[in-house]
Image (tube, rainbow, N blue to C red; front, side):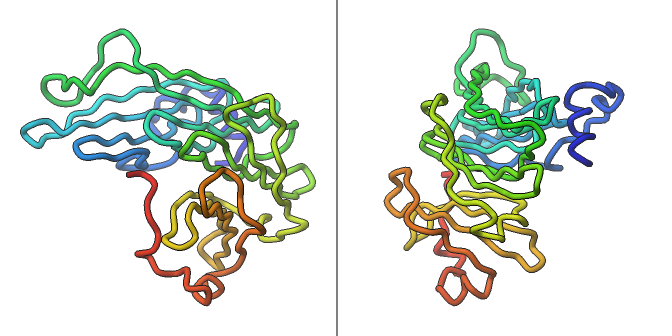
Length: 261
C-alpha cells in the first residue's frame, strides 16, 4: 500500500475498507511491548488509523485473560513503538503530509472492560490514552523509521525530505518545545537513504543501542550507541554490513538483550 493510499484509508475517504479487518502491521500475535511474570502487554496499529494495546494476565489456573485498549488518530498511523509499560510513541503523516510524532500514554480510567476469558482479574482495568504531540515536520517530508527511548526521554526518527535526503533526528519527549536535534543525514551516512526499520536493544559490551537498518538483502545497519544510557549517543555511529559487524565481534546473538523485560 502506498503512503497516499494509507492516508486515504486513515482519514476515512474509503469507508468500505475500514470493515475488512486488515491490520496495519501484523497477523497473529501483536508485537510485544512489555512482559513480566504473569503479565504481557502487546500493541499494533489497525487500518492505519488506530492503535490497539492488549493487556493479558495469567490467572491462578494458568489461563490467560486479556483486554484491549484502543484509540484513533487524526493522521495516518505508519509506525508505533513501545517505550515501556503503558508508554507508546506513534509516528505518521497528516493530511497535508507532515510527519508527526505523538506520545500515547495509557492511564487508568473509569468504566468497565470487556475481558476475553472468565472473571475479570484485578490487574485488568480500563485505561484511556493521553496524547501529546512532540513533533510536527514540514509538508511533503516522509516518515521512514523511529524508536522510543525506554526511559521516555526522547524519540529517534528518520525523516526523508522532498529531495530524497534522510535525516536522523533526536526529539525531546519531555520538553516538546525543544527543537529536534539532527544527529546525522544521508550526505554524511549514505546508508540512511536505504533505512526501512528501527529497533532498540542492549548489548553486553556496548550498552544501549538504537539500530536503523536496511532491507535484509545486502543488509546494512547504523548503530547509535549510548554506553552508559545517559540519553547522549557516544561518538559516531557504527555503520556497516553483516561482515563488518561480525569482524567487530558484534554478531553473537546471546550478547543482545531484549528491552521488553
